[in-house]
Image 1 (tube, helix red, strand yellow):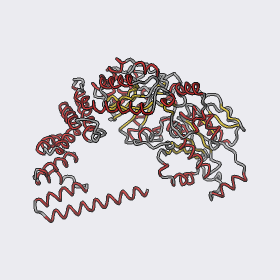
Image 2: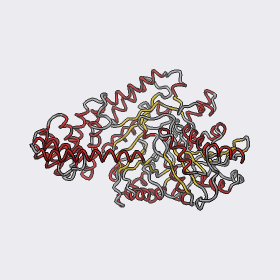
Image 3: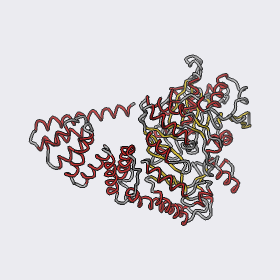
Length: 624
């Protein structure tokens, strides 16, 4: 992903008028850093809010690469994750005024392009002389569209942006336009024309780039660029090219180690296909283990790029989830999407992944070309066979840079001007006379309904490899899934049947492999909810033996004793943990039941002080 600059000339008289209108003075040379430029790189907000922000709230890793290369060259760079800044609009102008950037780069996806445009307009109002650059996936494929229709955008960085952006910054810093034509990988206006320079050369040796973790903290990492697939709905092949470029295992693990030392323990390996080179995956996993990095991570792969050897190493190195793009249970539909996957490979990948205690996550697309009730049933049948614990269903959408989009343009004779509409993508079904909104909604309802109805059965059918070195990992795996049924995503979903039964089965399965904190706690809470307090005490007491310093287990055990009116035993559990209002409230109730009014009052007062302190701290954090 990229960042961007703008180099738009404004006549001096108009500039003075605009600056005066905002009560601003023209920035002078005094006070600037050694390299003279203050650069902001902004990840803007999407056109539409999400019920869950994960898919749009994360700054692309390419932004950190761009920032790291600039910092290595001595530039003053800040990265701002403004995916939700529109909810605090007063901060936008205040930030631009306070930071006084010379250049603002925007990381642009189709979903956030309007947010970028709106922020660019505000930035230009605050300082008409600021340079605005768009980069990223959407900017790469819509560079002419952006420069034609939005005068606030001065430059677009096209494709891989690290060196293109750095070179552009250096040209702008020199204060003249002579070097623009020689700067590869950019587009800009030249008079009334929009021009594009020669494409930037791909970075063959990714290890030559500075590791962003030297300067920044983040959780999404990538060990490669490119994908072996050529799916019609994906822009990756055109953005990265068809050749996959790999970082060395040493370079990638060095990045993980830097972030680990900064306190980060959970990672998203966001390569399009992490397992594309199987030997390299094993090297990475061995290096993680040899360096003692006790991390947890998730990855993305293809079902035909997986085997038991790499699954074994991935699990031992901390992998807990792999996401697979299945797209459809119909081989015909997968063929039309150019998703060249055999059904047997999909089934084998999911079975093997689960056997090693790694959650296999399935992505499905519906509303595809030639989609029918029969092909939807084929997807339902596939789900029942592969038994995923997480399914993500998307309606097929068309985006710039994909073959679907090129076909759409040819069929309907549309130009990129279609993106002047305030939309994030084009639903394919809207262009297909054989599909209707009502039919698509019914497809989605059937898919989700069938998946949720089958979930508990998937839990009962879980089959894990019987090798002792994996037992503790199996316990962790089963308890994590159990928690999704008892307290997580599925706990309040009425479409998921027998949730408590599935959770109990998974917690017991976990404890059959090894003592597991999460399993003891989850099972104890289930028994409390069933008012089976004696059983809860048995389970939780076992948990406390294995994890004596656990506050949740002790408190939960104490509450179970209270429900059995064993207040002395409850106090033995609770008095060790007096740092929360809730625990002190429980302690006060125990003393009340025992007739000790003085102690009751003491702990009620303590609970009150803790509540007051907590509210004061929360208010202070909101104020900051």
